[in-house]
Length: 177
Image (cartoon, rainbow, N blue to C red):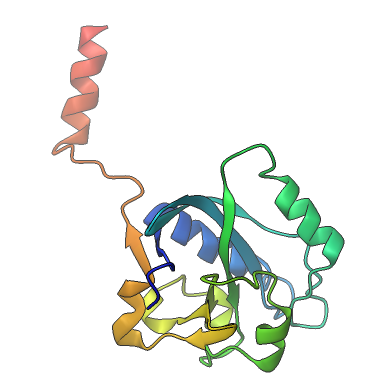
């Protein structure tokens, strides 16, 4: 891995939301879906902070985004420190490799861009160990071997609740009022 390619961290809550958004594309017709990941770059690390779903055409089963749709997606973060880190998109079956169309048409075409391919239209959610994790390296997208995925993308907690007895905690607050 290049020193200049940051490890991308994504909160579990945003990973789960990505899965639900991807699955929503296939609710009426079997269609692939797309979600852009925007976040903060912090030197050797980056963290996904925002999900943007472009106005994609999925009427043929695959996904196509126009220049206008991509400009609209970028417009959602104008004036913020957020940058495009990559995307997640779904495939209909277990094959999680980029197709030649994916390689050519993926919006994020810059060094270090991440592209996560989720199988089965994301109907089972996202488990990175079952996804294809691709990184734009040396001028093209490359499938990252499963044993190296942690060097490219990691899931971090989104919400952690350590309350032992939620009912007791809520009752104590109510009594204090």
